[in-house]
Image (cartoon, rainbow, N blue to C red):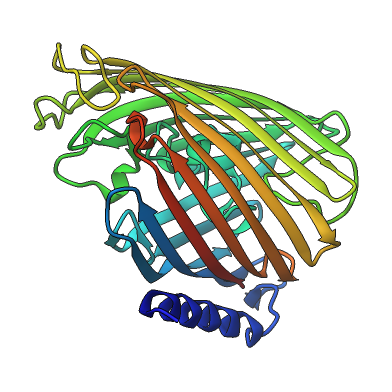
Length: 381
């Protein structure tokens, strides 16, 4: 066995043992008062082994805490709650402490909640599906904030539903940031609460509507109940630079408009999600042709379909996915094919996932291919 194979086997064994020895927990309420007061603590631990093998380059592997997110939630008054969540995990080759959820919420209206603070922006079904409830280890293009999908943002968020919950909706007005890409290969949204000196600042407005003909289908992948559920959703947003922080001459983004259409189906152990996003983005400086841009403008298109089948109900799921990205600056589409399996000890609370992802023409460069493998254990409490 080679040194690389040994490392892979050890990582797989380490991750597998950590799942097998995890106790079953469903959340912890550490205090509950007579008038609805409560304090709850929880979190998610995602330990991941990843391996990449690009054509024409050396392979790399790593063992990381992909997400390490504790949270505290509580209430002192009826219809009000507050929550904050911090991430100590590793993403985009960086270990950093990042604020995720940080908001207050009022639930006293019929069929509507009002949230103020840092919370999910109502765009992209895949992004709104929590990382702990995904079928593939990593999100596809349509749910990735690096490629046009807004991240959590700070502002006013409204969410609601019809009386029968067959129609759900969301609307937000927020401050949002874009991290300029050094080579203009990304359209990377982030939240200003984690702001860096070179991030573009701006205001973003958007909303979504989802229709559930057979009853509410929540933002969660996998079919654990075997019930027939379906949904179709549309969303849109606009972001504009407010000119407060433009220091990267050829990389600062001036405006972004995004559109989404998505759908999902759950039936008899099958789970399918499909989504298409389109983003019209423009740089501040004219005449820049680099990365995804031609003459400082691009239409960035992402689409994906992913699904799975419970081979052993509520225990073993086989999954697959296909995703594609195109942009004005690409010579060809960037395509990804994924295959994998999930084993559930306690549904999404305790599970182990494996995904093999095959990249063709990375970043629109013909012949630039890369294979990736992800093995991840998850513990949610």
